[in-house]
Each structure stands twice: as structure tokens, then as C-alpha cells.
Length: 196
Image 1 (tube, rainbow, N blue to C red):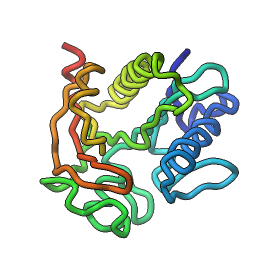
Image 2: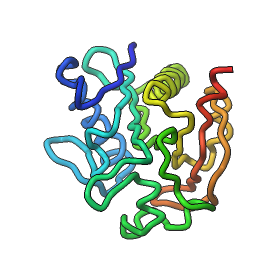
Image 3: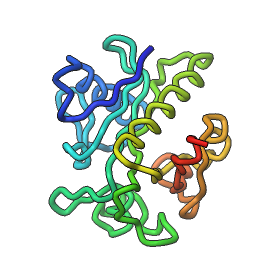
């Protein structure tokens, strides 16, 4: 099992891996979770999959076990910035409630957003924790390489339990809200705490 950080600048070096991340996202979010999201050619994608983002894949050969997208809070593409901020501003049409944060969403170079986090449903339970650890480790490393000191994320409301297990230091930055299929909460993850 290995981890790879993908970008528009390096995707040509990794064969089908970039496309396989989007195929795995489709399986996780559209097929398993039944979310109504854009898809084409067997892949799930959205307006935040731009050259400004990075994608982390935990994989073995062409099989993608887990992934996450990292997007700078300074990102701009047409009317869009990043998912949490656009939800707060009402740009997403209410799919995610506007009151997801207690304060205004930041636009700051050292703050990045973590989104589209998934672990394949095909991973056996005894291997899931190892896959989670690999994903979290690669996510933190890739974000720090981009100059990030903090990540924002919309996480399942059970985040305190599994974040601690993965060694993440986080704090809530918004209320627990029912979104689509469960209770979620915005959190701020301190990337510098993992360095000490």
C-alpha cells in the first residue's frame, strides 16, 4: 500500500491513478452514499477539482483504497472559492446549510480545506484503521508541503473519537448539523501540533 499526492502538474506521471481516484469517489459518494453529485465517464467530480487543488490517494497499484482533496482557502474559479466558504455564502443553493460556521470562512494562504474524504467500502474492517492512518499522514504531509498550517473540514459529528485515534488535533468551528445522510460538523485541524 502506498500514498501519492496528485496534482494537475504531476498526474501524467501516475497513469490511471488520477482517474481512479474520481472513480473511487463515485463509488463512495454516488453509489454507496447515494449523494446527488455530478458524474461522467464513471467518475465523480465537482467545481473544486481544479489545478489549485491536490488529491491524496492511498492505493495499491490501480486500486484506490482512500482519498481526500485539499484546496487552498484562497482558491477562486469563476463564482466559486472553496466548499465550506461557498456553502456559508449560499453559492451552493442550500445543499450544505449556510450556518455551518460560527465565524466567517477564512481566506488565508496557510489555511486549506480538506474535502471529499473517503475510504473504500471494500476495505475489510481489520484494515480500515491502517488505511485511515496512511490517509491522515499523507494529507498532513501534503498540506504542510503547500505551506498549510491548518485544515478546515466538514466531518461526521463523531469526529472527536476517530480524530484522536489518528493523532489529529482539532476543534469545532461550527454547530452539529444534519446534512443529507447524517450529522456533520465543521472542524479546524491544527497541522503544526503533529510536528511537536
